[in-house]
Length: 372
Image (tube, rainbow, N blue to C red):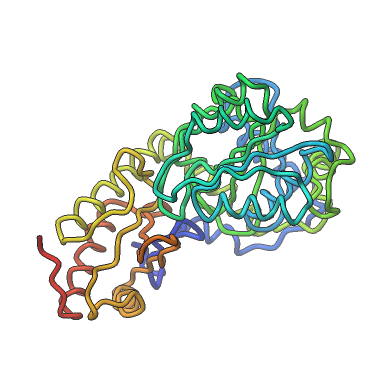
């Protein structure tokens, strides 16, 4: 842990960044500067290559949080006569459905238990039953629980039925190997402050070029018009339509350099998996129970049941860990009392070992023993 970090963020984003990523934000830059806009173009090319080695794809950056980009894609790519099938097995799938509702996009919501992965047979049935469905949207890593949905298999179904596939890869892109061409993903969405380990301030959509080029005039928003933002960046060498988050862009460039230096997505995925393995095994050894089956668990974030003991409150547990330099997440599922611990960001196996020692000390201070 860097000495200048007051605590380690064990969350799915914003997350702990390296000292060098933070240092990149210590200079001011002009949004009209050719050097800066060339850097944006370079980031776009590198993101596209990270998403797939195939030709015919392009990346658009968009100001705001990841949800802004989800809303941009839903609001800019689905035509007025289109219909969206949303897979809802967590809070972020549910958020996509809410976005569609607010934008007036016709939709069908496939409600799934929060601990279950996307049901492939039910998706096929929905497509067979309703031929008017044109698009499907799903979250890859549902950070409500840490569950990893079968994104490649869903892509195969979308290809079979000729549906446009929107994949919210917010918490997986850069940390879980994927190829959007192989998976038949038309629009892939992520954010600067997730597995690439940048700072919050913008997100991005990687898209098939031809379908995106056909979206002119579809947007239901001015500032979140994905097509117009893409055309501006294409025609003006990376220039954003409106004021861009210059400091965060510089930090993101540094984060992408560090991803390559680590060995790319495969190496980062390996580190995240080792972080999660140590966390899961250590927590189980202490008596905690995991919400998600190991087979469906992502290396991004893990949900644990709260102990059934009146001496345990999440607020007290959180404060005990924060006092020991670790910040965790409250639970977000509706079916059980849980809390979550992230294993991404500038976090390493030794940090997880220190966390487990801190948890043991916190339980001792709370007079709790969870032994089997």
